[in-house]
Amino acid sequence: MSAPSSTHEQGHRAPASRVALALRARELGIVIALVALVAVTAVVNPRFLSAQSLRDLVLGAAILIVLAVGQTVVIITRNIDLSVGSVLGLSAYAVGSLLQANPGLPIVAAVLVGLAFGAVLGLVNGALVRFGNVPALVVTLGTLYVYRGVAFFWAGGQQINADELPRGFLGFGTATVLGVPWLLVIAVVVVLATGYFLRNQRSGRELYAMGSDPAAARLVGIPVGRRTLAAFTFSGALAGLAGVLFAARFGTIDAAAGNGYELNVVAAAVVGGVAVFGGSGTVYGAAIGALLLTTIGSALPVLGIDQFWQQAIVGALILLAIGTDKAVAARVAARLRKESSRV
Image (tube, rainbow, N blue to C red; front, top):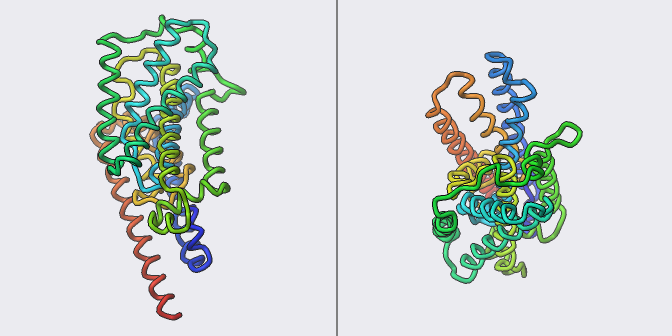
């Protein structure tokens, strides 16, 4: 499901609908692959579907889903944010240090601090992309190392252990509401709220228009620079939120927290149907992609498959997703040329 540019809606409604149907079919395909993987793994080892196993699975997926939602918003605008893992780590360490010094700080306040801290880091990314006219790939690759370096300098080789954090905060990482972990509830709320915004709000649909054709978006009066800033700030804020969830989930925080998440997040978005060239994709698909990657990571050891194959499978899924994007784009372009020749 995608949100096509409003400038194309009247003239190219039929091809756009076909793209939407193709993407919906792709999301459905991911769900089918996920169900098949769970079924095969459960047959090999029924304990894979035990309550504890499923709980660990969704707790791990929740953090990746929150990150994938922010990454999706950035990719839709034809950009990318490679710094999310470092933002997560730096935010987690900042919130952990704050809670260490102020054990009575409410959990809500810790969450807000994480959101604000990550938003500032994301705003820096957006400002460098907008005002520096530097590709987002280069900017966020640089800030990935800068933010990680700041985290190592700040930590000074030390780490924050679970016994130094408030019990209430650690309990939040595993607490449930009506049997559902709070971390999963937060991830679902983030997905639904962002999905609603992108589909129903004008500024959300303008992000798709930017990704589809930046030059045309400027011509129709869309504030591309401002929207770019907002997209990176949003991604940073969600990475900061993921940092708080990471700290609550694992308890132990060091300067390497979140290392490697950036590639998993991009993979989750792309596998979930978000076009790497911008302009299409949904946060729902990205969330399913994050759940699929997390499940693969948990299922392969149960199936006795070497860890190497996990990376190979994820790589193959990314190549398959990009190939599908190219095929769909080529078919739509051919269809548009054919219909234009009839006019």
